[in-house]
Length: 214
Image (cartoon, rainbow, N blue to C red; front, side, top):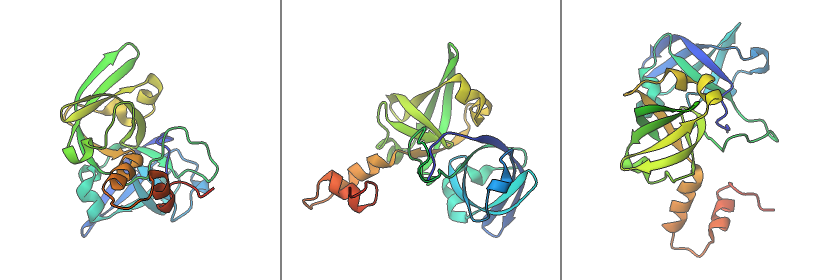
């Protein structure tokens, strides 16, 4: 589980296919002595497992299924990617709960500077948009953001200067694909509304493990 607060912008050193799967070597400034093999790291919003590491780099493997639904299918040497290590138990939740399970991709259709901030507009499919709400949380390439506007077939977010300068948003260009993960609460609400049982939404969230029983 992640928070959507990016810790580093890494660079893809190698991208090697092994059958339908892809192995990535990513350069990072992470203190890798603190990163264990088998640990989860979010790469552009995709939860991946560390399978190797060395001085200034680590390896992850991407399954064919994950490639089919994320922008990692187009990754190549030199691409910059957002990185975040999994949230520690008891750690502060600076953004919102991000699972690293990408729901699909969107496309950047506009980027406008507004004072020191920037407004980014993305188009995406209806199966994603049904979960996107005004002022709700959304993860774009792993970055926790707030939806500032909705329009037919897409949404808009405002990116503050610090976020822009410390994520791959500074490199995004019109027409480029991004990974999108909607706020999981919307999925639970939909599941609740489609049920015939008598459970309240709170009880459903507890059963699914999202809320504690206390």
